[in-house]
Image 1 (cartoon, rainbow, N blue to C red):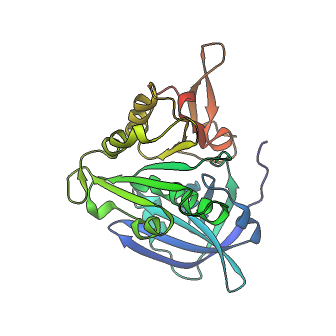
Image 2 (cartoon, rainbow, N blue to C red; image 1 turned 90 degrees about the vertical axis):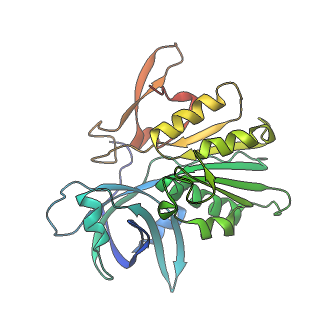
Length: 276
């Protein structure tokens, strides 16, 4: 089995609603999580609470040290019974955690301009990427730019803006209903700026609803800017055993094949995916 890892215990430090139905949970975890990469994820299950039996996948939003502890943060939206139960967790509650899992984003050497295109809760791994890049980059602020295009259905669903403004050169907002920022899709904003990104020295990263990333694939089809996407899929195990998160990708022979989001991803080059 790939990605052999042990389930560890995490303890809730805080779990607060940051905007309507969106929560930020902070957990104490073992020190090995400090090497987690942006784009990786964890599988989380509540201890001794019965249903839901299956663990839930969450992108890593941030990791840092605080008072001799390693803190891991997850940003999530309540979408069903499982995440509703997570939203009721309190300080000192215990969780079973498997991770960090999967493959993270790759930032090529010499990359001077980064575009983050986020939809909804897809902002979580991209925010971690911007934070990670800022901490580890040897470039000055003037020499590199990280521009984030973030969209949501409505202003009530916009999350993580303050943090993004701290770690990005610029944050551009859109909402489907026009309640904040551009009235329309986040991809509209990216299209307006697309000519400012060049194949040499630029990278695009995206995470969000399937329809949004399918539009991104169409936009970039005739514009050869490298782009990596973090795929959101339902998962039961997180280690490749259940095959429940398979996605269809292109093969070198021109045919299609399937890869597992949990072990082969969740980060893929956007041109690899067959966007049905």
